[in-house]
Image 1 (cartoon, rainbow, N blue to C red):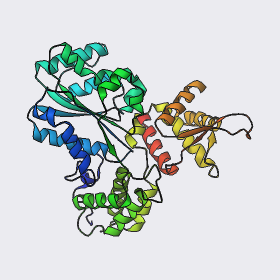
Image 2 (cartoon, rainbow, N blue to C red; image 1 turned 135 degrees about the vertical axis):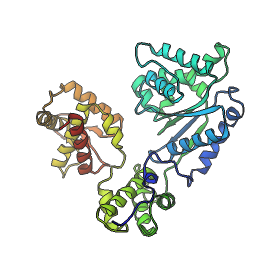
Image 3 (cartoon, rainbow, N blue to C red; image 1 turned 180 degrees about the vertical axis):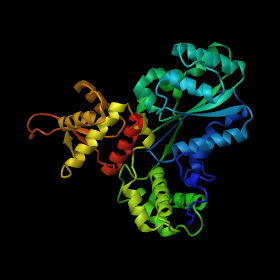
Image 4 (spheres, helix red, strand yellow; image 1 turned 90 degrees about the vertical axis):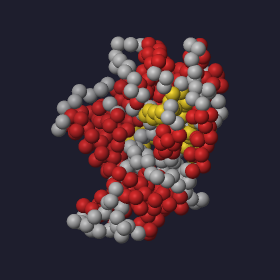
Length: 397
């Protein structure tokens, strides 16, 4: 069987490449902001915010900086917490404890008690760490701004206890709206150290793909025209500033899928037809792990929205009631007791907040007033297949 991959891991979202094309400046800024803490742990409490669209390199740059921390200091550790997966302060504290090898009880204690345990153990074990909170807006949206404010003002806890500053803080978000929700004291404590990540251009995405392809694929399995084809779809240019473009993660996922298609079809190189099929089957702004984290019935309701839109291909929107009817049928199909009307409204609000769907109120010309729902940026067939696979797996069917 012809070989396509030599290191498939280089095309996965978790991979940290040896080089970060077009993010060298942001990486250098991080190193500069935290240099004092790395040189003299405990002397200060540095806090930096990384902002940019999904796929603009924030997470991989932060993790790359984490490798730099490990190489640069024998005393400072790096901790990366996903606030998409950990949406409460207690969950964040427990994850920090796990990564620092600190035994924090899983249940039976209040958040305040968990925080005190963490601070005491960090002091007793003489630990210093830089903590990155990825997708921090999920913590604020789910648990309120006070949860983040508590972490931002940890330095005051140390001072009041006569201890040193034990942590540095990196907050990763799509924009700064989370900061506006903080109280003035927390905003002041956070400061104004912001590192911006602009969307990648087509040329920049081509260079990223080239670097990843050289690490991931065997020689001769691809040519530069294939990479340019993907970059044209994923990158921004002066003519197209589509908010879903400029996403390197999306481009890398297309390359991985195209490579897998070539491998499955038993050919020794990636062809344009593989790229076209990969694009059709690749979710743009939604990650599979995000879908899996939704409650079961929220997943079923999202699937109902997708199916309703597919049944009405001539309209970009469907009324809430249409999605609700489809949801009822799906619950019967899956053998589930349907949730109430008010709960579906909560699901819709959450799906809208997470960016899975778009909503608007019907125009005055329509009969009555209703909420209209759309999914403008995702291939519906692909989203449908992914949701069905996840739901069936969860139900064991």
